[in-house]
Image (cartoon, rainbow over all chains, first blue to last red):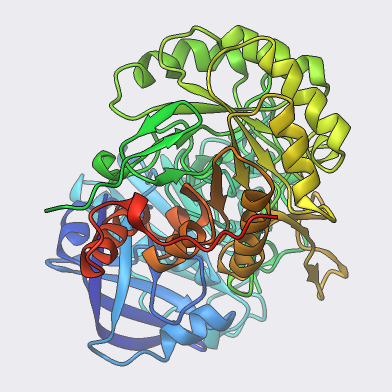
Length: 250
Length: 304
């Protein structure tokens, strides 16, 4: 785990309201695994850091993807090139990649861990199908990639009309990220799927116990440390708060 | 020459005045990038006799310059502490105190008796101020007789240093401070979190599942400095200041206001190196002012 002052190196739009930010974080770029995250803080920002899955890592740089959902993310998006953010990571437990083929299922901002997952899966010889869904074509992340890409939109404006889960083929490894209700649907169809969950987090390092994940076996563990990637059937989806912004995918 | 910063707190000699607050440093094994040289002492996550699951999520909510938490004292119970953590603590070069909790005065005493004499446990911090449990916690902290009864119950079962962590949710902290001093406390920690609430306007309900939570962070610092100062004026035992310390200057405010040491909590969540930076900042301040030790720091502590 590293704590770095990282310069913002670039910003680009990848869907309506969705942006990728690149930063110079060499130690993290070389060690991060698919599904892990970084916790970002910045001067004059909110008190607590904000967690982001690593979207891409290349050489000395990492990227994260975000939407302006609150004051913190708006500040991050307003930063100039060369501005510095404090970057803590890589954090959490990522995806385990094994088998002949993988399907990556992402809903909206759930695209976040998938480019790295596709890279690492292909690196171990897996054939990758990426199914990406959103409400409309304009909200689909333009950068989905793999051996095969399937698009799904609620309004049918691009690809299959319906959900990404419904549009997905089966595969040996199923990796998913998106709103909790989407991940609950993944758990129904593929109990062994690996899903990356989103929760509020305090420290991101396992100390504060703020990111409690309700488990089917009872009790809680820490999304930041034992997660954020879980076996879909292990999470007690019904016990997760349903009224939060992150839970309903807005 | 580096200024001397070791301090004596109720029978414990600490290498420095900056301590890790309970619940913000786990059991000492979780915090990454820990610089032990800077840590005066660690107060463990609060424990009960039995394991506790903790509260349902959401457990935390960010507020202006602060955070609300309602973790609910999730923990493995006393036997796991004895088995899994104390042996490690015994090897460490800074003292570890256990933050103890109970639903009755006798349960606190029972917990202290179980831990007394276990190698690795240097003392106790009695938590009579947790706002996030249904039974006990804050109930003991806002009544001088109940606070004294808990302190006595623990005092009878151990000769180890005994600190009592006070709640700010009282009309006169001096009354509680004197009550637990008389009951045998060796030092006080002032203060625990304030009880707060934040509402989700989309859901028309509290943002925390426990409804209320404990407010910490810079938002409470001036309140905490005042209450720690009031406690220090009321008693002869040392007071450890805690509440919203982010930088060395914040810690120095508590020290000048009459505290003998400080605890750092929420800052560690934001910056895993906070304690080391605050420790070094205090050294730098003393050096810049030409003070050869922390004992020479002028204090503002008129007696009541």
